[in-house]
Amino acid sequence: MSETQVEKSLPHAILANDYATEWMGIEVLELGDGTATITMQLRKEMLNGFGIAHGGMVFALADTAFALSCNPAEGSDKTITVASGVDINFLKPGIPGRTLTAHGQRVAQQGRSGVYDIRVTQDTPQGDEELLAVFRGRSRTIPKPA
Image (cartoon, rainbow, N blue to C red; front, side):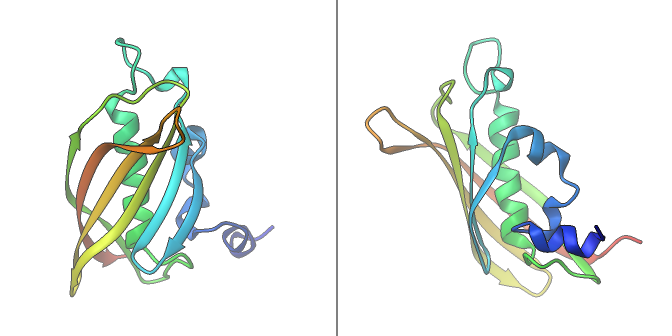
């Protein structure tokens, strides 16, 4: 199977070689222009010594939604959009076994620079979503490395 065929079978071109996202079990729910919604089940190997979500796992989920929001689903032969800086605020602990969802949204785009907000939620036993973390990413579009 050619690289183009692999990319066409995926919801987003950057997932073709994204082994971290594969290991985390991230699923893409929705993609749009400047938006992405993804989920991940919080497994025991994603917990810290306190038995709650490791901050790095929550960050990685948010960062993946950021990357999917910043880059066109079909990919580009000429450019990629990467993080120039990010901030994250953890608001609640992630509970083992729960589903975490990251909702990414473009806030602003000026030339090659952009700002994106990612809201990470977790499901509750009542079937609701509660806000777990807020991530703000600053992006920069650069030439695709050779």
